[in-house]
Image (tube, rainbow, N blue to C red; front, side, top):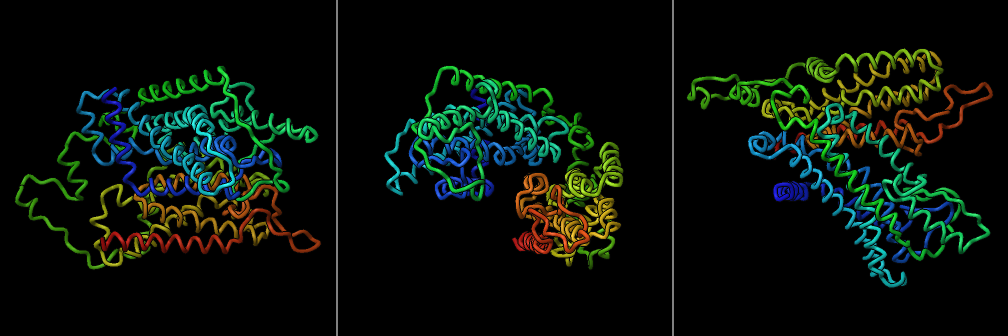
Length: 538
Protein backbone atom coordinates (compact mmCIF):
# COMPACT_ATOMS: atom_id res chain seq x y z
CA UNK A 1 0.00 0.00 0.00
CA UNK A 2 2.88 2.38 0.64
CA UNK A 3 4.08 1.83 -2.91
CA UNK A 4 0.59 2.32 -4.35
CA UNK A 5 -0.05 5.53 -2.42
CA UNK A 6 3.42 6.91 -3.22
CA UNK A 7 2.86 6.25 -6.92
CA UNK A 8 -0.58 7.87 -6.78
CA UNK A 9 0.74 10.88 -4.85
CA UNK A 10 3.54 11.50 -7.36
CA UNK A 11 1.11 11.24 -10.26
CA UNK A 12 -1.38 13.63 -8.64
CA UNK A 13 1.34 16.20 -7.96
CA UNK A 14 2.47 15.94 -11.57
CA UNK A 15 -1.08 16.44 -12.86
CA UNK A 16 -1.93 19.50 -10.77
CA UNK A 17 1.10 21.31 -12.22
CA UNK A 18 -0.22 21.03 -15.76
CA UNK A 19 -2.25 23.61 -17.66
CA UNK A 20 -4.93 21.00 -18.29
CA UNK A 21 -5.68 20.94 -14.58
CA UNK A 22 -6.38 24.67 -14.66
CA UNK A 23 -8.68 24.18 -17.66
CA UNK A 24 -10.63 21.47 -15.85
CA UNK A 25 -10.78 23.65 -12.74
CA UNK A 26 -12.26 26.49 -14.78
CA UNK A 27 -14.85 24.10 -16.25
CA UNK A 28 -15.86 22.94 -12.78
CA UNK A 29 -16.20 26.49 -11.46
CA UNK A 30 -18.29 27.40 -14.50
CA UNK A 31 -20.56 24.42 -13.84
CA UNK A 32 -21.02 25.51 -10.22
CA UNK A 33 -21.86 29.11 -11.09
CA UNK A 34 -23.96 28.02 -14.06
CA UNK A 35 -26.06 25.83 -11.78
CA UNK A 36 -26.90 28.89 -9.67
CA UNK A 37 -27.38 31.21 -12.64
CA UNK A 38 -29.55 28.75 -14.60
CA UNK A 39 -27.31 28.06 -17.59
CA UNK A 40 -26.77 24.56 -16.16
CA UNK A 41 -30.11 23.13 -15.09
CA UNK A 42 -31.30 20.02 -13.31
CA UNK A 43 -35.02 19.75 -14.00
CA UNK A 44 -37.68 17.21 -13.21
CA UNK A 45 -40.12 17.86 -16.04
CA UNK A 46 -40.91 21.54 -15.39
CA UNK A 47 -39.89 21.50 -11.72
CA UNK A 48 -36.69 23.04 -10.35
CA UNK A 49 -35.83 23.12 -6.65
CA UNK A 50 -35.38 26.31 -4.68
CA UNK A 51 -31.77 26.79 -3.70
CA UNK A 52 -30.97 25.43 -0.25
CA UNK A 53 -28.33 23.04 1.02
CA UNK A 54 -30.34 19.91 0.22
CA UNK A 55 -31.17 20.96 -3.35
CA UNK A 56 -27.65 22.26 -4.03
CA UNK A 57 -26.08 19.06 -2.70
CA UNK A 58 -28.32 16.79 -4.78
CA UNK A 59 -27.97 18.99 -7.86
CA UNK A 60 -24.17 19.13 -7.62
CA UNK A 61 -24.05 15.35 -7.20
CA UNK A 62 -25.96 14.90 -10.45
CA UNK A 63 -23.85 17.48 -12.29
CA UNK A 64 -20.60 15.94 -11.02
CA UNK A 65 -21.63 12.42 -11.97
CA UNK A 66 -22.73 13.55 -15.42
CA UNK A 67 -19.99 15.92 -16.55
CA UNK A 68 -16.97 14.83 -14.51
CA UNK A 69 -17.50 11.19 -15.41
CA UNK A 70 -17.46 12.18 -19.10
CA UNK A 71 -14.87 14.96 -19.35
CA UNK A 72 -12.82 13.72 -16.40
CA UNK A 73 -12.35 10.33 -18.05
CA UNK A 74 -10.56 11.92 -21.00
CA UNK A 75 -8.57 14.18 -18.70
CA UNK A 76 -7.07 11.38 -16.61
CA UNK A 77 -6.67 8.57 -19.16
CA UNK A 78 -3.13 9.37 -20.28
CA UNK A 79 -1.00 8.27 -17.32
CA UNK A 80 0.42 5.10 -18.86
CA UNK A 81 1.05 6.78 -22.20
CA UNK A 82 2.80 9.68 -20.46
CA UNK A 83 5.10 7.34 -18.50
CA UNK A 84 5.89 5.48 -21.70
CA UNK A 85 6.54 8.66 -23.68
CA UNK A 86 8.74 10.32 -21.05
CA UNK A 87 10.80 7.20 -20.28
CA UNK A 88 9.56 6.90 -16.69
CA UNK A 89 7.74 3.65 -17.44
CA UNK A 90 10.83 1.65 -18.49
CA UNK A 91 12.58 2.86 -15.33
CA UNK A 92 9.67 1.67 -13.19
CA UNK A 93 9.75 -1.65 -15.04
CA UNK A 94 13.26 -2.29 -13.67
CA UNK A 95 11.99 -2.06 -10.08
CA UNK A 96 10.08 -4.74 -8.09
CA UNK A 97 6.87 -2.78 -8.72
CA UNK A 98 4.19 -5.27 -9.78
CA UNK A 99 1.70 -4.73 -12.55
CA UNK A 100 -1.20 -4.75 -10.11
CA UNK A 101 0.45 -2.17 -7.84
CA UNK A 102 1.21 0.12 -10.77
CA UNK A 103 -2.29 -0.10 -12.21
CA UNK A 104 -4.04 0.36 -8.86
CA UNK A 105 -1.75 3.31 -8.07
CA UNK A 106 -2.67 5.00 -11.35
CA UNK A 107 -6.36 4.29 -10.74
CA UNK A 108 -6.05 5.83 -7.29
CA UNK A 109 -4.40 8.87 -8.87
CA UNK A 110 -7.26 9.18 -11.37
CA UNK A 111 -9.79 8.91 -8.57
CA UNK A 112 -8.02 11.50 -6.42
CA UNK A 113 -7.92 14.07 -9.22
CA UNK A 114 -11.60 13.56 -10.05
CA UNK A 115 -12.55 13.66 -6.37
CA UNK A 116 -10.71 16.97 -5.98
CA UNK A 117 -12.64 18.40 -8.92
CA UNK A 118 -15.95 17.23 -7.43
CA UNK A 119 -14.97 18.69 -4.06
CA UNK A 120 -14.30 22.02 -5.77
CA UNK A 121 -17.75 21.85 -7.38
CA UNK A 122 -19.43 21.31 -4.00
CA UNK A 123 -17.27 24.03 -2.43
CA UNK A 124 -18.45 26.47 -5.10
CA UNK A 125 -22.07 25.70 -4.14
CA UNK A 126 -21.31 26.36 -0.48
CA UNK A 127 -19.56 29.63 -1.38
CA UNK A 128 -22.56 30.74 -3.45
CA UNK A 129 -24.91 29.99 -0.60
CA UNK A 130 -22.76 31.92 1.87
CA UNK A 131 -22.04 34.93 -0.34
CA UNK A 132 -25.38 35.46 -2.06
CA UNK A 133 -27.56 35.49 1.02
CA UNK A 134 -31.23 34.63 1.23
CA UNK A 135 -30.55 30.99 0.33
CA UNK A 136 -30.96 29.60 3.82
CA UNK A 137 -28.35 28.31 6.27
CA UNK A 138 -25.63 25.92 5.19
CA UNK A 139 -26.34 22.36 6.34
CA UNK A 140 -22.98 20.50 6.05
CA UNK A 141 -24.54 17.03 6.01
CA UNK A 142 -26.65 17.90 2.96
CA UNK A 143 -23.40 18.52 1.05
CA UNK A 144 -21.17 15.84 2.57
CA UNK A 145 -23.60 12.91 2.21
CA UNK A 146 -24.26 13.27 -1.57
CA UNK A 147 -20.55 13.82 -2.16
CA UNK A 148 -19.51 10.74 -0.18
CA UNK A 149 -22.32 8.33 -1.02
CA UNK A 150 -23.24 9.31 -4.59
CA UNK A 151 -20.28 11.06 -6.23
CA UNK A 152 -17.23 9.19 -4.94
CA UNK A 153 -18.35 5.67 -6.00
CA UNK A 154 -19.29 6.98 -9.45
CA UNK A 155 -15.90 8.68 -9.87
CA UNK A 156 -14.16 5.52 -8.64
CA UNK A 157 -15.86 3.64 -11.48
CA UNK A 158 -14.75 6.32 -13.94
CA UNK A 159 -11.16 6.16 -12.71
CA UNK A 160 -11.09 2.36 -12.90
CA UNK A 161 -12.50 2.36 -16.42
CA UNK A 162 -9.92 4.99 -17.45
CA UNK A 163 -6.99 2.82 -16.37
CA UNK A 164 -8.62 -0.26 -17.94
CA UNK A 165 -8.92 1.57 -21.25
CA UNK A 166 -5.28 2.66 -20.99
CA UNK A 167 -3.95 -0.87 -20.54
CA UNK A 168 -6.25 -2.74 -22.94
CA UNK A 169 -5.04 -3.02 -26.55
CA UNK A 170 -7.54 -1.49 -28.93
CA UNK A 171 -9.00 0.88 -26.35
CA UNK A 172 -6.02 3.16 -25.87
CA UNK A 173 -6.66 5.32 -28.92
CA UNK A 174 -9.52 7.00 -30.68
CA UNK A 175 -11.71 3.89 -30.64
CA UNK A 176 -11.51 3.88 -26.84
CA UNK A 177 -12.82 7.44 -26.71
CA UNK A 178 -15.79 6.48 -28.86
CA UNK A 179 -16.39 3.32 -26.82
CA UNK A 180 -16.40 5.33 -23.60
CA UNK A 181 -18.94 7.74 -25.03
CA UNK A 182 -21.40 4.92 -25.63
CA UNK A 183 -20.54 3.16 -22.37
CA UNK A 184 -21.07 6.40 -20.46
CA UNK A 185 -24.40 6.96 -22.20
CA UNK A 186 -25.53 3.48 -21.25
CA UNK A 187 -24.47 3.99 -17.63
CA UNK A 188 -26.37 7.30 -17.42
CA UNK A 189 -29.49 5.72 -18.87
CA UNK A 190 -29.16 2.78 -16.47
CA UNK A 191 -28.79 5.14 -13.53
CA UNK A 192 -31.88 7.17 -14.43
CA UNK A 193 -34.08 4.21 -15.39
CA UNK A 194 -32.80 1.58 -12.96
CA UNK A 195 -35.21 -0.45 -10.85
CA UNK A 196 -32.91 -0.86 -7.86
CA UNK A 197 -29.76 0.59 -6.26
CA UNK A 198 -27.54 -2.28 -7.43
CA UNK A 199 -28.39 -1.42 -11.04
CA UNK A 200 -27.68 2.30 -10.48
CA UNK A 201 -23.90 2.85 -10.92
CA UNK A 202 -24.15 6.65 -10.66
CA UNK A 203 -26.71 6.76 -7.82
CA UNK A 204 -28.89 9.26 -9.68
CA UNK A 205 -32.12 7.27 -9.58
CA UNK A 206 -32.25 7.44 -5.78
CA UNK A 207 -31.87 11.24 -5.76
CA UNK A 208 -34.45 11.63 -8.53
CA UNK A 209 -36.92 9.46 -6.58
CA UNK A 210 -36.36 11.57 -3.47
CA UNK A 211 -36.94 14.80 -5.38
CA UNK A 212 -40.00 13.30 -7.08
CA UNK A 213 -41.52 12.43 -3.69
CA UNK A 214 -41.14 16.08 -2.64
CA UNK A 215 -42.85 17.25 -5.86
CA UNK A 216 -45.74 14.83 -5.44
CA UNK A 217 -46.21 15.90 -1.82
CA UNK A 218 -46.29 19.62 -2.70
CA UNK A 219 -48.10 19.39 -6.07
CA UNK A 220 -50.43 16.36 -5.98
CA UNK A 221 -52.46 17.72 -8.90
CA UNK A 222 -49.38 17.73 -11.17
CA UNK A 223 -49.34 13.89 -11.26
CA UNK A 224 -45.57 13.85 -11.52
CA UNK A 225 -44.34 10.48 -12.81
CA UNK A 226 -40.67 11.26 -13.40
CA UNK A 227 -38.55 12.95 -16.03
CA UNK A 228 -35.03 14.03 -15.12
CA UNK A 229 -32.99 16.23 -17.46
CA UNK A 230 -29.58 17.83 -16.98
CA UNK A 231 -29.03 20.47 -19.63
CA UNK A 232 -26.65 23.24 -20.67
CA UNK A 233 -28.03 26.56 -21.79
CA UNK A 234 -31.48 26.26 -20.22
CA UNK A 235 -33.94 23.44 -19.90
CA UNK A 236 -36.67 22.18 -22.21
CA UNK A 237 -40.32 22.99 -21.79
CA UNK A 238 -41.92 26.01 -20.22
CA UNK A 239 -40.82 28.21 -17.33
CA UNK A 240 -39.52 26.24 -14.33
CA UNK A 241 -41.86 25.62 -11.41
CA UNK A 242 -40.03 25.89 -8.09
CA UNK A 243 -40.45 23.42 -5.24
CA UNK A 244 -38.84 22.91 -1.85
CA UNK A 245 -36.56 19.90 -1.52
CA UNK A 246 -36.03 18.74 2.08
CA UNK A 247 -33.19 16.34 1.26
CA UNK A 248 -32.68 12.62 0.84
CA UNK A 249 -33.05 9.92 3.45
CA UNK A 250 -30.09 7.57 3.26
CA UNK A 251 -31.27 3.99 3.85
CA UNK A 252 -29.01 1.02 4.51
CA UNK A 253 -29.69 -0.76 1.22
CA UNK A 254 -28.60 2.27 -0.79
CA UNK A 255 -25.37 2.61 1.22
CA UNK A 256 -24.60 -1.08 0.74
CA UNK A 257 -25.11 -0.64 -3.01
CA UNK A 258 -22.64 2.24 -3.08
CA UNK A 259 -20.07 0.04 -1.33
CA UNK A 260 -20.81 -2.61 -3.94
CA UNK A 261 -19.97 -0.20 -6.77
CA UNK A 262 -16.74 0.78 -5.00
CA UNK A 263 -15.75 -2.89 -4.95
CA UNK A 264 -16.69 -3.17 -8.64
CA UNK A 265 -14.35 -0.25 -9.36
CA UNK A 266 -11.54 -1.97 -7.46
CA UNK A 267 -12.18 -5.17 -9.40
CA UNK A 268 -12.01 -3.34 -12.73
CA UNK A 269 -8.72 -1.73 -11.71
CA UNK A 270 -7.23 -5.10 -10.74
CA UNK A 271 -8.42 -6.70 -13.98
CA UNK A 272 -6.72 -3.88 -15.88
CA UNK A 273 -3.37 -5.30 -14.72
CA UNK A 274 -3.88 -8.45 -16.83
CA UNK A 275 -3.43 -6.82 -20.29
CA UNK A 276 -0.89 -4.27 -18.99
CA UNK A 277 2.39 -4.69 -20.92
CA UNK A 278 4.54 -3.31 -18.04
CA UNK A 279 6.62 -1.44 -20.63
CA UNK A 280 8.09 -4.70 -21.94
CA UNK A 281 9.77 -4.14 -25.33
CA UNK A 282 8.93 -7.72 -26.30
CA UNK A 283 5.25 -6.72 -26.22
CA UNK A 284 5.80 -3.49 -28.17
CA UNK A 285 3.51 -4.75 -30.93
CA UNK A 286 0.61 -3.99 -28.56
CA UNK A 287 1.71 -0.37 -28.71
CA UNK A 288 2.07 -0.35 -32.49
CA UNK A 289 5.89 -0.16 -32.46
CA UNK A 290 8.68 -2.61 -33.22
CA UNK A 291 10.91 -3.79 -30.43
CA UNK A 292 14.66 -3.31 -30.69
CA UNK A 293 17.53 -4.91 -28.82
CA UNK A 294 19.98 -2.13 -29.69
CA UNK A 295 19.62 0.73 -27.19
CA UNK A 296 22.21 2.76 -29.01
CA UNK A 297 20.29 2.53 -32.25
CA UNK A 298 17.09 3.48 -30.45
CA UNK A 299 18.73 6.55 -28.99
CA UNK A 300 20.11 7.44 -32.40
CA UNK A 301 16.66 7.24 -33.95
CA UNK A 302 15.39 9.67 -31.34
CA UNK A 303 18.21 12.05 -32.25
CA UNK A 304 17.49 11.46 -35.94
CA UNK A 305 21.13 10.37 -36.57
CA UNK A 306 22.87 7.10 -37.34
CA UNK A 307 24.63 5.34 -34.51
CA UNK A 308 28.40 5.70 -34.62
CA UNK A 309 31.27 4.08 -32.73
CA UNK A 310 33.39 7.23 -32.86
CA UNK A 311 32.62 9.37 -29.75
CA UNK A 312 34.43 12.32 -31.20
CA UNK A 313 32.44 12.16 -34.40
CA UNK A 314 29.21 11.92 -32.38
CA UNK A 315 30.12 14.98 -30.34
CA UNK A 316 31.09 16.92 -33.44
CA UNK A 317 27.98 16.09 -35.43
CA UNK A 318 25.97 19.14 -36.49
CA UNK A 319 22.74 19.07 -38.42
CA UNK A 320 23.23 21.04 -41.67
CA UNK A 321 20.71 23.79 -42.25
CA UNK A 322 18.30 23.17 -45.09
CA UNK A 323 18.14 26.05 -47.53
CA UNK A 324 14.46 25.46 -48.25
CA UNK A 325 11.77 22.98 -47.47
CA UNK A 326 10.78 20.53 -50.21
CA UNK A 327 8.01 21.75 -52.53
CA UNK A 328 4.64 22.03 -50.80
CA UNK A 329 3.03 19.19 -52.82
CA UNK A 330 5.82 16.89 -51.69
CA UNK A 331 5.22 17.76 -48.04
CA UNK A 332 1.49 17.20 -48.49
CA UNK A 333 2.16 13.79 -50.01
CA UNK A 334 4.47 12.85 -47.15
CA UNK A 335 1.88 13.94 -44.57
CA UNK A 336 -0.81 11.98 -46.39
CA UNK A 337 1.32 8.83 -46.38
CA UNK A 338 1.97 9.28 -42.65
CA UNK A 339 -1.75 9.75 -41.99
CA UNK A 340 -2.64 6.44 -43.63
CA UNK A 341 0.44 4.58 -42.41
CA UNK A 342 -1.43 3.16 -39.41
CA UNK A 343 -4.47 2.02 -41.40
CA UNK A 344 -4.50 -1.76 -41.03
CA UNK A 345 -6.52 -4.24 -43.06
CA UNK A 346 -9.50 -4.23 -40.70
CA UNK A 347 -9.75 -0.45 -40.78
CA UNK A 348 -9.69 -0.49 -44.57
CA UNK A 349 -12.32 -3.24 -44.82
CA UNK A 350 -14.70 -1.37 -42.53
CA UNK A 351 -14.15 1.80 -44.57
CA UNK A 352 -14.98 -0.06 -47.78
CA UNK A 353 -18.13 -1.44 -46.18
CA UNK A 354 -19.23 2.05 -45.19
CA UNK A 355 -18.53 3.29 -48.71
CA UNK A 356 -20.79 0.59 -50.15
CA UNK A 357 -23.50 1.46 -47.62
CA UNK A 358 -23.22 5.16 -48.50
CA UNK A 359 -23.69 4.39 -52.20
CA UNK A 360 -26.65 2.05 -51.72
CA UNK A 361 -28.56 3.56 -48.80
CA UNK A 362 -31.26 6.24 -49.26
CA UNK A 363 -29.72 9.68 -49.51
CA UNK A 364 -31.05 11.01 -46.17
CA UNK A 365 -29.58 7.97 -44.41
CA UNK A 366 -26.26 8.32 -46.24
CA UNK A 367 -26.03 12.01 -45.39
CA UNK A 368 -26.93 11.59 -41.75
CA UNK A 369 -25.93 8.25 -40.26
CA UNK A 370 -23.37 6.90 -42.71
CA UNK A 371 -21.46 10.18 -43.12
CA UNK A 372 -21.30 10.47 -39.34
CA UNK A 373 -19.97 6.90 -39.16
CA UNK A 374 -17.39 7.59 -41.87
CA UNK A 375 -16.02 10.69 -40.20
CA UNK A 376 -15.82 9.10 -36.77
CA UNK A 377 -14.08 6.07 -38.30
CA UNK A 378 -11.48 8.42 -39.79
CA UNK A 379 -10.42 9.92 -36.45
CA UNK A 380 -7.11 7.96 -36.34
CA UNK A 381 -6.15 9.51 -39.67
CA UNK A 382 -6.37 13.06 -38.23
CA UNK A 383 -5.55 12.66 -34.54
CA UNK A 384 -1.76 12.94 -35.00
CA UNK A 385 -1.89 16.19 -36.99
CA UNK A 386 0.10 18.86 -35.19
CA UNK A 387 1.38 16.45 -32.54
CA UNK A 388 3.41 14.02 -34.66
CA UNK A 389 6.67 16.01 -34.51
CA UNK A 390 6.60 16.29 -30.72
CA UNK A 391 5.55 12.65 -30.32
CA UNK A 392 8.27 11.28 -32.61
CA UNK A 393 11.00 13.70 -31.43
CA UNK A 394 11.51 15.18 -34.91
CA UNK A 395 10.88 18.82 -34.02
CA UNK A 396 14.61 19.49 -33.96
CA UNK A 397 14.73 18.72 -37.68
CA UNK A 398 11.47 20.30 -38.78
CA UNK A 399 11.35 23.55 -36.80
CA UNK A 400 14.70 25.07 -37.88
CA UNK A 401 13.90 24.76 -41.59
CA UNK A 402 12.96 27.99 -43.37
CA UNK A 403 9.23 28.49 -43.66
CA UNK A 404 8.40 25.58 -41.33
CA UNK A 405 6.30 27.84 -39.11
CA UNK A 406 3.57 28.02 -41.73
CA UNK A 407 4.37 25.63 -44.60
CA UNK A 408 4.45 22.43 -42.58
CA UNK A 409 1.14 23.11 -40.69
CA UNK A 410 -0.47 24.14 -43.98
CA UNK A 411 0.73 20.93 -45.62
CA UNK A 412 -0.48 18.82 -42.71
CA UNK A 413 -3.90 20.49 -42.88
CA UNK A 414 -4.09 19.97 -46.64
CA UNK A 415 -3.29 16.28 -46.16
CA UNK A 416 -6.01 16.04 -43.53
CA UNK A 417 -8.49 17.70 -45.87
CA UNK A 418 -7.64 15.21 -48.61
CA UNK A 419 -8.09 12.34 -46.13
CA UNK A 420 -11.48 13.70 -45.01
CA UNK A 421 -12.58 14.15 -48.61
CA UNK A 422 -11.52 10.61 -49.54
CA UNK A 423 -13.24 9.08 -46.53
CA UNK A 424 -16.50 10.94 -47.16
CA UNK A 425 -16.30 10.86 -50.97
CA UNK A 426 -19.31 8.54 -51.61
CA UNK A 427 -21.65 10.90 -49.76
CA UNK A 428 -20.32 13.87 -51.74
CA UNK A 429 -20.96 11.97 -54.99
CA UNK A 430 -24.55 11.24 -53.91
CA UNK A 431 -25.15 14.87 -52.91
CA UNK A 432 -23.74 16.15 -56.21
CA UNK A 433 -25.89 13.73 -58.18
CA UNK A 434 -28.97 14.93 -56.27
CA UNK A 435 -28.08 18.58 -56.93
CA UNK A 436 -28.02 19.42 -53.22
CA UNK A 437 -26.02 22.64 -52.99
CA UNK A 438 -26.60 23.13 -49.21
CA UNK A 439 -25.63 19.52 -48.59
CA UNK A 440 -22.38 19.86 -50.53
CA UNK A 441 -21.59 23.14 -48.75
CA UNK A 442 -22.07 21.49 -45.34
CA UNK A 443 -19.97 18.50 -46.45
CA UNK A 444 -17.18 20.79 -47.64
CA UNK A 445 -17.26 22.78 -44.39
CA UNK A 446 -16.88 19.59 -42.37
CA UNK A 447 -14.07 18.42 -44.64
CA UNK A 448 -12.13 21.62 -43.96
CA UNK A 449 -13.00 21.94 -40.29
CA UNK A 450 -12.14 18.48 -38.93
CA UNK A 451 -8.41 18.45 -39.87
CA UNK A 452 -8.06 22.11 -38.83
CA UNK A 453 -9.41 21.24 -35.37
CA UNK A 454 -7.06 18.26 -35.14
CA UNK A 455 -4.08 20.38 -36.19
CA UNK A 456 -4.80 23.11 -33.63
CA UNK A 457 -5.39 20.64 -30.79
CA UNK A 458 -2.21 18.73 -31.59
CA UNK A 459 -0.09 21.86 -32.00
CA UNK A 460 -1.08 23.26 -28.61
CA UNK A 461 -1.23 20.04 -26.59
CA UNK A 462 1.56 18.01 -28.29
CA UNK A 463 -0.68 14.96 -28.03
CA UNK A 464 -3.56 13.44 -29.95
CA UNK A 465 -5.70 12.97 -26.81
CA UNK A 466 -7.19 16.47 -26.82
CA UNK A 467 -8.54 16.21 -30.35
CA UNK A 468 -9.85 12.68 -29.85
CA UNK A 469 -11.80 13.68 -26.74
CA UNK A 470 -13.05 17.03 -28.07
CA UNK A 471 -14.05 15.66 -31.45
CA UNK A 472 -15.95 12.69 -30.02
CA UNK A 473 -17.98 15.03 -27.78
CA UNK A 474 -18.67 17.38 -30.69
CA UNK A 475 -19.63 14.46 -32.95
CA UNK A 476 -21.88 12.96 -30.29
CA UNK A 477 -23.69 16.21 -29.46
CA UNK A 478 -23.93 17.60 -33.01
CA UNK A 479 -24.62 15.05 -35.76
CA UNK A 480 -25.91 12.33 -33.41
CA UNK A 481 -28.03 14.31 -30.93
CA UNK A 482 -28.90 17.35 -33.07
CA UNK A 483 -27.77 19.97 -30.58
CA UNK A 484 -28.48 23.31 -32.32
CA UNK A 485 -25.42 24.85 -33.92
CA UNK A 486 -23.10 21.85 -33.43
CA UNK A 487 -23.87 19.84 -36.57
CA UNK A 488 -20.63 20.66 -38.35
CA UNK A 489 -21.20 18.10 -41.14
CA UNK A 490 -24.81 18.92 -42.03
CA UNK A 491 -25.82 15.38 -41.13
CA UNK A 492 -28.96 16.24 -39.15
CA UNK A 493 -31.32 13.31 -39.22
CA UNK A 494 -34.45 13.90 -41.24
CA UNK A 495 -33.20 17.13 -42.79
CA UNK A 496 -34.39 17.79 -46.35
CA UNK A 497 -31.86 17.02 -49.05
CA UNK A 498 -33.22 18.78 -52.10
CA UNK A 499 -35.63 21.73 -52.37
CA UNK A 500 -39.23 20.64 -52.84
CA UNK A 501 -40.99 21.58 -56.05
CA UNK A 502 -43.15 24.19 -54.36
CA UNK A 503 -40.26 26.40 -53.44
CA UNK A 504 -37.08 26.75 -51.46
CA UNK A 505 -36.27 24.25 -48.74
CA UNK A 506 -36.61 25.34 -45.12
CA UNK A 507 -33.39 25.80 -43.18
CA UNK A 508 -31.91 22.63 -41.82
CA UNK A 509 -32.87 22.18 -38.16
CA UNK A 510 -29.96 22.28 -35.77
CA UNK A 511 -27.34 22.98 -38.44
CA UNK A 512 -25.16 26.05 -38.15
CA UNK A 513 -24.39 27.89 -41.38
CA UNK A 514 -21.42 26.30 -43.22
CA UNK A 515 -19.71 29.69 -43.21
CA UNK A 516 -19.39 29.44 -39.43
CA UNK A 517 -17.46 26.18 -39.67
CA UNK A 518 -15.31 27.56 -42.46
CA UNK A 519 -14.44 30.51 -40.22
CA UNK A 520 -13.68 28.14 -37.34
CA UNK A 521 -11.47 26.10 -39.65
CA UNK A 522 -9.50 29.24 -40.53
CA UNK A 523 -9.22 30.17 -36.87
CA UNK A 524 -7.92 26.70 -35.97
CA UNK A 525 -5.35 26.89 -38.76
CA UNK A 526 -4.13 30.26 -37.51
CA UNK A 527 -3.98 28.90 -33.95
CA UNK A 528 -1.81 25.99 -35.14
CA UNK A 529 0.62 28.37 -36.87
CA UNK A 530 0.77 30.54 -33.75
CA UNK A 531 1.63 27.46 -31.69
CA UNK A 532 4.41 26.59 -34.12
CA UNK A 533 5.82 30.14 -33.99
CA UNK A 534 5.61 30.04 -30.19
CA UNK A 535 7.75 26.90 -30.07
CA UNK A 536 10.25 28.43 -32.50
CA UNK A 537 10.72 31.48 -30.30
CA UNK A 538 10.63 29.66 -26.95
